[in-house]
Image (cartoon, rainbow, N blue to C red; front, side, top):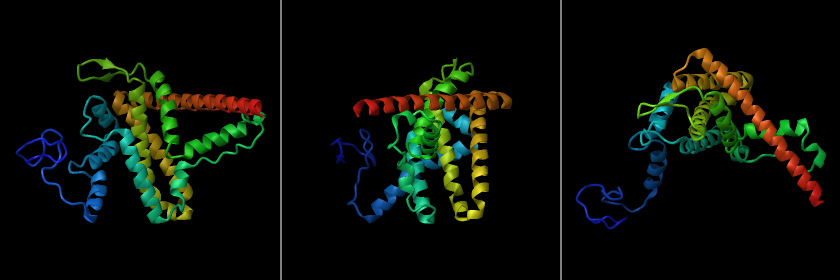
Length: 266
């Protein structure tokens, strides 16, 4: 066989050079369906395996990924894109939101304000609420700030490495860990979408979601760092508080700079 992709000559079902199948069929409608389903399932069940391990053994799964098991699992950014797509599709099918894509991408802030109000408490609170509710890039912002706070407070907690060393997580590893936790939170958001159809359960659904996500971050770091329950609870609480402080301070600095620039340009 001659590979149609790289022109390599071989004798098997797959090209050993680029991995393409020996026989390629003409594109048809079934190819679209197979590619869409394969993106989530795949022949090796990577998507299902990643989701199941994140739910059943989140900290251990992330530990495996950080220690080199990269092919077995989806990386957190790729998984989050899949989960966002699934969230949008399920929301649209259930009719929970008529503008679910707008909800994920838009931040509606009042920019027509006086420059002196940029540093006001109301403006900062509104920005925090808008970014926190944004599922597309609000999560990336929160994970970015969380990486710094968790890196600082968990710096004395060591993780075993393949070479036998015991080292703390660096900033990138903390960011990836936070993104994996965000994937768990989004998974539960998708699972709870049917409950949103019942208006009387809005408050209960919100409370359950918050409890589950908070519990999972404690379990996450307890398994990943092999520490006790109380230590995980305390360090997570302090790290979360510092994350909020860092976010607020950064937001106020950006707001003040934006206000000064707007004043100078008038």
